[in-house]
Image 1: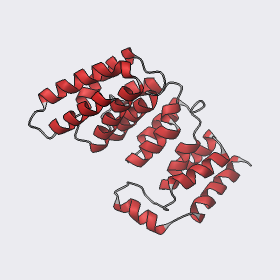
Image 2: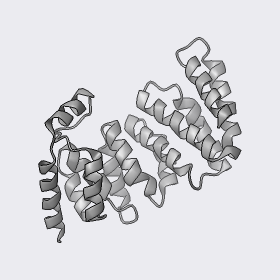
Image 3: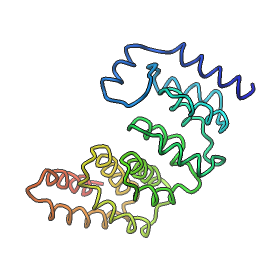
Image 4: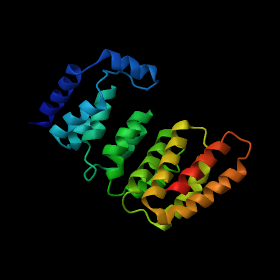
Length: 220
């Protein structure tokens, strides 16, 4: 099939599997999209797997201004072939946690220079760009993060453990719990930083969060 034929196939697939009840539920949950057809990500993933990675098709779908096209674009993007400008366009267009989760699962964490992007994006002032960085850390924990990498990340862990953004906080906690679980030898700097966070936040809303984190770390 040509790219244009696959594009038409994806659009037809989305319209065929649209679900009004799911769309209404997603809107109720506050997901920020111009339009929602209500197709589940699991169904779209099967379609993406059948078609295969294709950056040209991904770029075409990204230009469509509705949820399912955006998510399919992230699923179909080619991590090895995508340009840096295209990656930056995609992350800038991630306007909610669902897009970040799909983007990280299928694209961002699979980039050849993923760790470089972590260091770049973790310093961003954009909520969902930061969230992507921490989700990428969680994915990298399974592979090649070193003690030096973790030490470099600790100032950001201490900064964002108490950030106002619920989604960033959740991503921070998940990332460093995953690190401690996957790489037990890297656990001590995380425990040390968490104790420092606890000391600085006694009596605040983050005290319990820090205590819970330490409890989890001690059982990793």
